[in-house]
Image 1: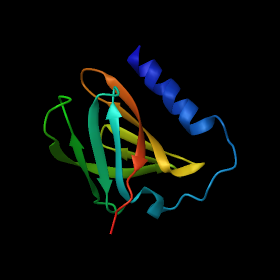
Image 2: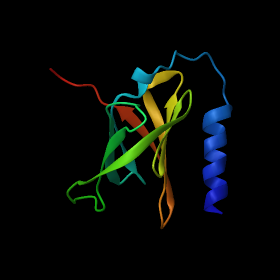
Image 3: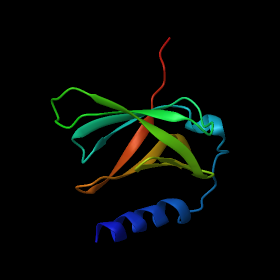
Image 4: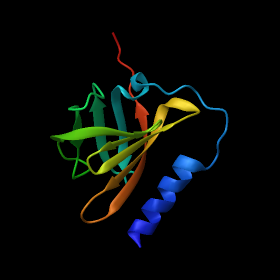
Length: 122
């Protein structure tokens, strides 16, 4: 059942609603993307490069008031607006390049989150 839900979300995100879109380049993916799983558990994905051996830094909380855990995940580009970061798909919103949908395929259950590209403050 969860696979059907994930496939439906991916289909909707990738193929439905072809409204006027912005130009997505490799640079569109570069940066720190943050959101919450289940509107509770904070997480961030930091992408520095899309080279063939690229790794993204994944930070997440297993408890709402817990500390961030960290790991590295391999990155591969699926299509124009989608990255596969091991078990997480990052799908950039073609109408707002600072927002994306994250779909996490985890052992216990799959999760979906809207993520926002963080802007650095100098």
